Length: 96
Image (cartoon, rainbow, N blue to C red; front, side, top):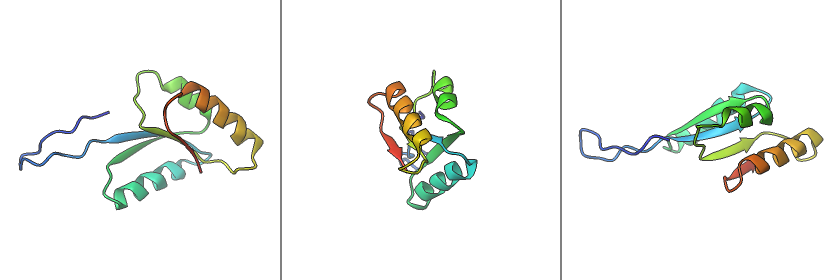
């Protein structure tokens, strides 16, 4: 994660937060990033088509949170949520 730095004008620049996003479509990750940008938050999203790929790529990365796009009544979403919770203990996980 990038650290806040002072800009030339002496104002602290907002630090960039990284969210891991699991969704069937990459557009969901871009949509999420745009929502934060509209609110003035600098966020970068990294898209993964499934939980296993995010977990495999997580070594050496610092995520602010993990976001899972899956319907509430989806058995595959339930199993992915369990995998993510096990791999990212203590990290906020949002299922949308």
